[in-house]
Image (tube, rainbow, N blue to C red; front, side, top):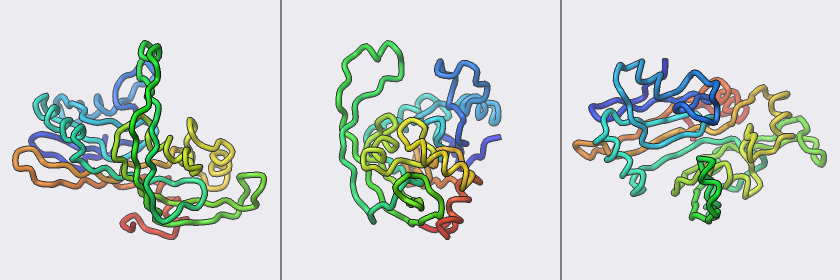
Length: 240
């Protein structure tokens, strides 16, 4: 059962678990659990995706309940009238706040697209540091301790793996990232902290409700592995 965070006559939002694919994909032919199919079976009707989250990312995921609503909600994302915020645990101590304005090469989703020439796309992310910590274990040869930050990320563009690639660019990769992260760091965290997932969570989504245009904010609770990190930072879920 998926945790339903919000529902009206036009759409429904769930708290996507980390590690769950949105829909069937050629990338993993052996997977049997998908968010779209699970939600469809759970509520007894078709759902239509209006945005996406990577498989290892948890958090707010919005679906439309009919094709007309899907088009209208998708337009909100395309016109950048929605606001998405993410939580991440990253390597090192971040500054208080900054903007990452760094174009990213287009990454194709399909094998056939890979034949086209890669182009640079505008990509902008704001970040704010919510807390910092230093833990008494070694994850790099030069340092006897390991530093981490809890960050709030706000993307202003929607490029593939944007947050993960942007944090790598500023040398603060997201903990648990097996594609763009620090593998030595990931192994140290798994051994000493006990978390093994990508520490990236779609914390909130703001959009305009269809019908009356009222602003709606949906917030996704964290899972147990995130709770471990918030305890390390000395914080509770409703802070930040």
